[in-house]
Image 1 (tube, helix red, strand yellow):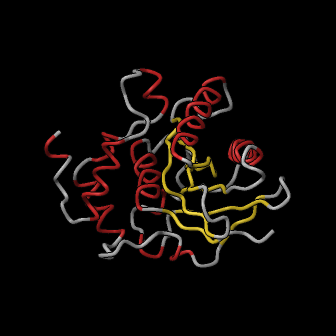
Image 2: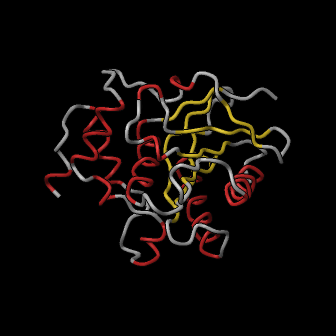
Length: 219
């Protein structure tokens, strides 16, 4: 079966980046969410940050995946993959935790899905517009995850007004947007904190429209 073409929305991409930026000395991970539509062209529409304290397989992971699965069913989405940034920023390589959780998600998605490793050490300096931040892995046999290298710069969905990814990132950091990023560790500590990250979603929509302070300066 041929691999589908892959794109990430601005929302999905930068929520991964913000999760890594908020906890630069921790192993962080999360779930990637895709449209259920065209199987030849998969769009990663969102991500759900999972953990920065308890990233391993655990009952908390099962709770999180159950809630995310329910959310996906209500919105006609599917859990399509897994992302991770390692504790050592200079080591964006795969490890057993990444492949095990990614394989679990893949098995529950009719053996389709991806694994993303974040190269957090590349943030300073980084050419976001060449997409040096993420490595994407695919798996065809259920065991071996192989790096997908072709068309890296085309993975990130381009908005109509073509705002540069580096401009969005710098604006997010200047506005201290990481403080709004909620993962499941935060949610489990305080259930009023929203793991869907609607504030971040709104911020990113505003940034793409060049209205950089519409949300963050009024909350």
